Length: 107
Length: 111
Picture (cartoon, rainbow over the protein chains, first blue to last red):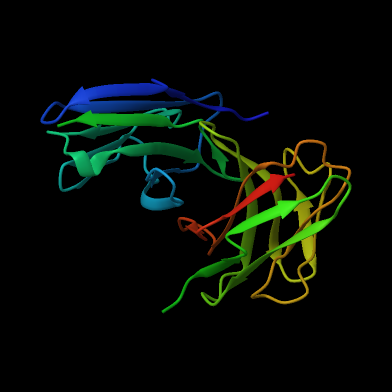
């Protein structure tokens, strides 16, 4: 069945460093969604990408959808302590979530 | 404000007991979902419903049951057949093609 793999599983960064998490699917996705879950909290929807090669930005966050619609990435520029949490990608149709990348930011 | 309400926030279950987790939404979304999250893990789909009076099994439906008698409500029952029920349970809703809105979750512990 459809699987969505995320790497890395964990990432420790110094505040101010950049961070990237990658999401790879075994099949072509109709769209990809990204969520953030703060420690002890629930996932919060960040963005959805639909088009091949699409790039979207939200302040310091840049999201990309691969040309083949099988992979995606989330890049955070100049991380802050408020970026701490787990970032999940999710592929449609019956939304399959990746295992997430847990980001630790050291001040 | 529109959103999803899950209750209770914490729940303790004795061995062999059935418990029901509540999920209510006032977003007028057609689709609702139940996910299970274990510590340090991702989200695994238990059941989902795309319309009232209809629901489908997800990847880990064994030991769980649901109902969808009203558009706003999608309760999840964790039965005694679920051998390892201790987990964080998340309910979500969405409109087709949109991102999910999650509730704040229920932490279930077997005592």
